[in-house]
Length: 310
Figure 1 (tube, rainbow, N blue to C red):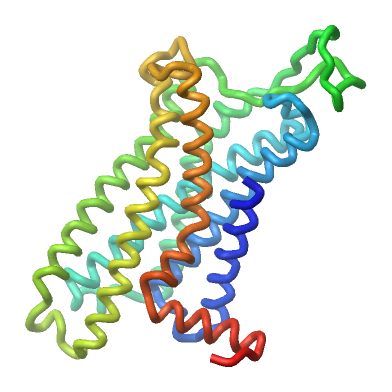
Figure 2 (figure 1 turned 90 degrees about the vertical axis):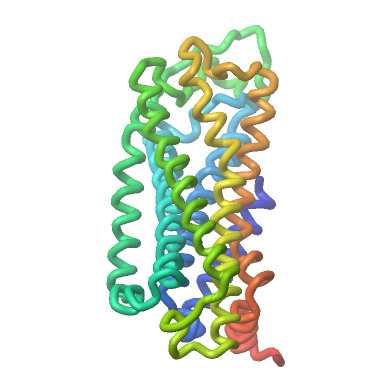
């Protein structure tokens, strides 16, 4: 996790640096990608830093004492909010590319940086709103007495700890539905839009749709579109296992593991977390691997900053 945190923050900050430094990178599409990069960075920072902090403070996995109740609430709210911001951002830039490819004339009339910034602001408002039920239900704070007969190394000076966990109530199941429902709806929308974009590109664009575009410009645009398709689909593929682990308890309210055996669930949730963190770190690598334009911009930004030769 520390390795993923360092890698993810470095790559995302590098992308933000490139967009800030290279004028040609300040496009509508990149505004959405900047928002995605910021939300991914914040998600990784708080989700992983929380675990590192608790790991260094206590030898007990469920000891949240070091966070305090305020920290418990803050981390639950921040991680859930940034998850939704990333989700809604992926939907928005997929829709923006869909309109640009399928209805190019309409896109020219509607697309503007001001409109894009308004949509980005809305993603944060929606993200905060959707995070409220899950935050409330995952911020149960209580003191737990520890048996004196055990040795807890760093905890020998105290015989208690504080835990932060979910409420055991129907409201918690409702909050889980609220959390996972937007994910699966967004996944369906993005899959359908990407499929229609792929069909359009495969068939080729004709007539007025390509007015004013050179073959080189069309090829460059299609590479960016493919890059965005890969980014959006990897987002849902890498987050899918974690959403499943969040959803299964709904089918068996008497167990936090749902219908999955406890030993399998614990392994599943750890692997799912790692896949989630990989999703937050991998996007800048995709941009550079799939687009010569992005590679050139990275070279321009860092060579300009460090006076290296291109």
